Image 1 (tube, helix red, strand yellow):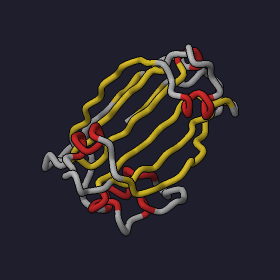
Image 2 (cartoon, rainbow, N blue to C red):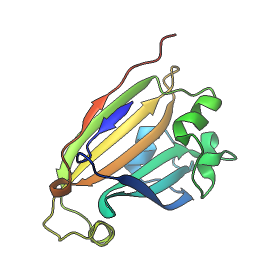
Image 3 (cartoon, rainbow, N blue to C red):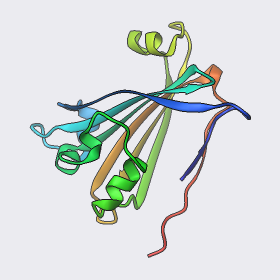
Length: 159
């Protein structure tokens, strides 16, 4: 998957905000197909472009998948989450995305250093394995005035 949304020539990097196992909210539980008692591992990141905050990205994984893997460790994952999932035999096969816009929460205002009236572009992505099993639910909130938009190009692996 190629994600484009950065300004030409801009340097982009992610700062980890933490990894934790949580009682997921209703939206995350539904997306991942979790029972009320099941938990999720969330990896939170702040995306910076030329050292200016542009996006918050949270990736949720069902605890039974992530527990005991680098996804649950509070450190950078060598090769990324997609590699860890592939090593578990859970290559993303189907991806669904939904885009909305809204005003930021107080916490988002603070982390992104934006005023209350700055709209955020909110993209949610659900990735499923070939079996249909949900393996990742991601929520990305982008500062609209600091973004050139998002273009996604995906190519499914050949069986």
